[in-house]
Length: 417
Image 1 (spheres, rainbow, N blue to C red):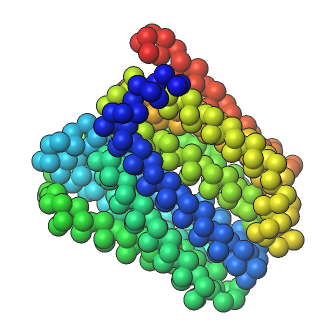
Image 2: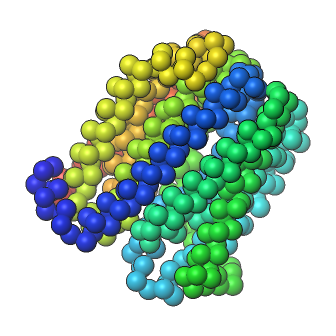
């Protein structure tokens, strides 16, 4: 690792990666600070049951959000990184992906509305689900993949901090009592919409990239070209968000609230780990021979975070939540182990197999492991409630992380990298 660090630290690429990592680190610090302000406040004002309803709606909408993303966060980032010196080519990629995402977003809304009308349990939560769905179009108009592909992470940081700031201000201004919980997803969307409009102005006006008219054949080809990566990104929902949905049916909103309280801090740490993935992805798309350094760095940091969360779980939950959330200590301890396995998925899956064109192998592994997690979820959640959901998430991530690592290592041996 020291030799590789010495080799690349004086290069222009190293400077770019370091700057990008610095900007993303600043973004992540903001990602820690704002929840530190809002989570204790929301826990006290809306309580564990409403906390659980928000988590349930978010888990449902995540399926439709993932559908509208269609894996473009990786394929579009990779394509832009490889053509970033050609402004015309980048404009074409940007246009094709944006039109494709808008098309998929419309389909997503139709599917959600149909599900609400057909499932009585969802009809009772119609308003909350529709407000939560607003995060889908706002995500479409905030193309973080574009800035990542150009390796201009500063702008991702600016827009992310703006979104979180507006949300935080809105929480304290408008959520005053328990019934105001339904405003939470709306406030999230308002902040993201403002940031999205700023991002599009920057891309199309300040930088002069063009939004071309949609060409049906090109849009269809764009969707087809990312199909394997899409399957790879949506299949984990079979054990991840599905565990939250299933828990809502078996255990109710209170159980969802306890699960979400414990998982939330792992999710924050997971997003910090993704800094490495996002900062290195465009660089590795051009120079995969530098993968070893990224591999060692990411796994080491993941181990430290995993151990730290396990040890600090009682302190964290008692500091940020009221006593009705204290059972989440067990959830946090169980899911803290999954951070290391998530690092394996990022290192060997997203930042190796996708970059080297092995999306299909990654898709097959993800499908098999996600189906295993889906199967495990039923008995584990039925018998062990929110702890069973935490075990499902961790065990499935272990299966997926280890499997992806073994396949990637085999490819590396064949390639001699």
